[in-house]
Amino acid sequence: MEYNQDQSRRRPRWAVRAAIAGAGALALLGVAAPAAADVTVTPTEAVQGDGADVTFRVTNDSRTASITEIDVQMPLDSPIAEVYPLSVDDWAPAMTNVQVDKPLESLHGYQITEVTTGVKWIAVEGRALPPGATTELFLSIGPLPKTQQLLFAVTLLHSDGTQVRMTGQPGESPAPALTLKAAPAGQGGHAAAHGGGADANAAPAADVDDAGDGPAGGTSYLTWSLVALLFIAAIAVVSVVLQNRRTPAPAAAPTDAEEPAESDSQDAGKTMATTP
Image (cartoon, rainbow, N blue to C red; front, side):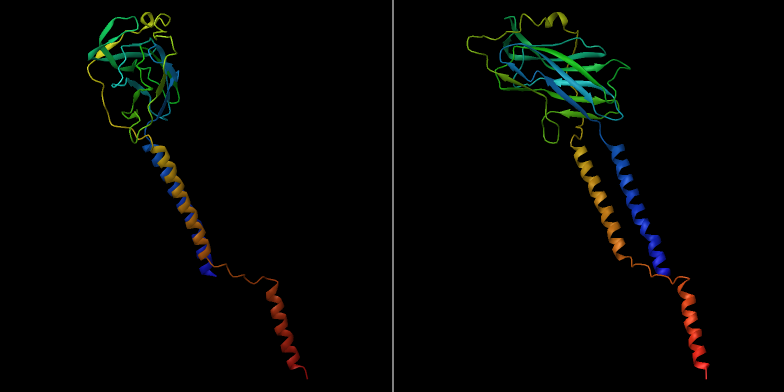
């Protein structure tokens, strides 16, 4: 009887320990989870040789950190002659320019010897992108190179110092992409050169020598976090089940109604034995 009571007292402890372990793991993941974000580019398609107004839509998926810098790198193997960041409230663009060995033709037909390889938007003080918020940044670019796809490597810097990199490299998120199609027969390209008004709307930008490279963010962290939580939960369930199987069922205690009946039968036997 005492053994069964002890076992019944121990049984809830396994569930409590499992719950504590799961809660602790969840809390640890919540504290250690890196900053996250989502970046898309529109339009998704454009024509080779034309100009395009490209929109980068950035959503801050972090629960605690704001985004303070958004860095977009142009593909080095397919340079673009003209890159103009358009004005956006709360963000100041800084451009990185390099000299090219072979001049490129601009949308307006003149030769370009210095091209923009990156644009970094820096949030105005006190106006960083808060958790859960979305912003849109705009580039007017062209002529688009004769390649099948443009990949824009994006790096986001958060207020807690963490970075999220979307470059398509192993362990990192895919880079936002713009698919390029060949111009229709008879169309020489530069179709957007006269209608975009990019030069008039372009935001003043500061030139910088080098784009900063920081530590890569763990973009596959969320997937591994979920796997770890499921594994911990499975261990907790198995522990509770095994403990329940090892615990013997408690013996049924005699009821008050049964004890008088047994006593009465013994008294009756004694009476019969003494009767002559």
